[in-house]
Length: 537
DNA sequence: AAGCGGACTTAGTACTATTCGA
DNA sequence: TCGAATAGTACTAAGTCCGCTT
Image (cartoon, rainbow, N blue to C red; front, side):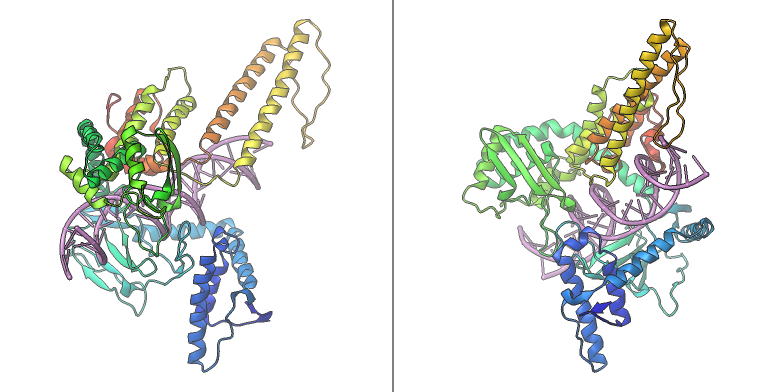
């Protein structure tokens, strides 16, 4: 790198850090002041320490005088080189990776070779928080074997530590937990990281099944629970009033519970942690919610609420500052304690599972499907239902870089097809009159000769029909693409929707399950695959 | 009953593999 | 058959919730 226009040779540790940093030059992280600040603090700290050790003085003090371009160029070159490797080299790497996965990616659980969810420890680098994160750009240290605890059967051989000169931190034999290995992430306040079994494992499958069993159980209690909170909206006790209001929101809008958060995390909220500034009331019953939820995703929704809910929200805002808690008498613990008293195993998050599954089932039931529909058309219906769930749960994704371009491409194709259709129509008319028109050679934009139109009326009609079908298909594609531009269907499919609803629907409508679930999801939900077409949630 | 550590689920994005269409 | 677009997977951050300690 250069400092103040002069080349500098960095000590190895500082160079490593600066290399991590410079690889983000062209990303969104570089637009955040916090990212630079946290990086540079650590950078200077390393340089100071190094200088002190050598009895010199560190001159690098101002990030504005730093030019990390040479490092960035180097990192980008490496990336390009990697992409440009020969097919053999790539195949060789793939094979090696597969061998590692075979060796480290499985555990023997109750005699069965079971796939792990993850088996690599998180590599060192810069912490990349989501949204406006106070710790963005801080250094995430390399994890050493000594930092790692392994959880094995007491009679299992201890795996050899693969790093020479090192040994495992601790070996435990705890069959009351599901993790196989753990370490602490110093960046996120010693947050515990784990190695788990994969989603296809029996342990995870059973826990998934029990999640949906609880949600199904809520179906049986929901009428009573709703009656209770509707009554409690009018309770004279402020804490109970707040609890009922929060439950109305959790049930109707599928908000998360909303635990308290630390100062050194991004400022995001859920239901219980909503602040006065996050809602705007308009009489008689309109409420606009606008806040950042999990992953700093914006939740912006204007809804009509129950008149008592509106009255209560107005009351909770009274004499408060925008930064004050809306539900100052409430936290997730007492909401969940109350829910538990109404139904065994009931917590706030169960409402999301329940409402997601119920919504999909209801939406699918409303779709009118017929036997002569193509699988694509049926899937369009399914995805529309899935989309309603994703919107309910506020599952978003960023618009892909190529979105506008690919929409434009579809338009161009439709236009070309329409133009060709006009020509075919005219040609058909002429042919029918018995005058077969002379066809001049036509060329496409690449200079290739286009196919001539047939002179047989039936063949012309067939071609017109083909074009009509193509136009219809493209239009459908366009609609769906635009609909799903900012909506992510995968999150609800993986976590919230009882897979048996989808399996039953697929069977009933002769849609191959592969159209709905990827290989990984089919492996995750083997327990859902054999329900019959009449199964209901 | 607050508050914290720990265990587990849920989340979007970055990366990689596969499919599509010229 | 190739490159671009799309689908699918890997990754790890960020939630929820429980139970223990003070």
